[in-house]
Amino acid sequence: MPDSATPSFTIRPATVDDVDDLARLVRELAHYERDPDAAVATADHFREALFPREASPAAYAHVAERDGLVVGMAVWFASFSTWTGRRGLWLEDLFVEPAQRGLGIGKALLTELARVCTARSWTRLEWVVLDWNAPAIEFYRSQGAQPLTEWTTYRVAGDALGRLAGGSPS
Image (cartoon, rainbow, N blue to C red; front, side):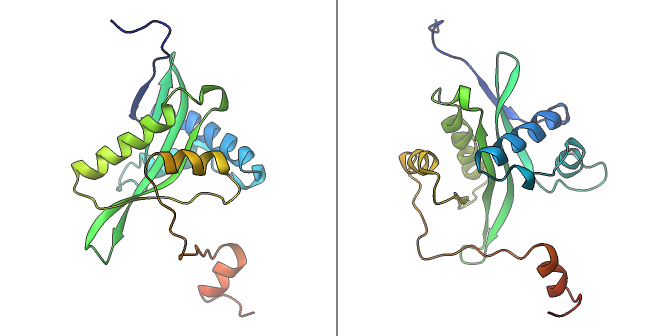
């Protein structure tokens, strides 16, 4: 019989009913990452990306539920490695509400994504973390993750993306 003092939660694939919670958690994550104005995605954006009517999903999500409330999320999509010739899983965001941390929810979300990878014979589970986020780095290392120190992530966005796409040259 489970110990009633042990906090219980469930990890499950997100449903269309979770899009409001996903949008809320992403805003909380942006605030935590010191960039609250950057999170402009709405519940409608998540509905369209995760549960499109006539196309394949652009991404997927798992949620952590405790006492009937969504308290954590993992948003991810399939990647591809030319070196292995196989898919992998790119974890876009993992977030657990601060009041719910330390209960094993983050580990359970990461474990579920590892299960998705192994069940599908995918070869990698990858993500990025901000250099200053020591608690996340410590958590990820405790799960066996290793930093790829010789790689630097690059991004083209906004006006630079428009220029690269053939807009006005700089």
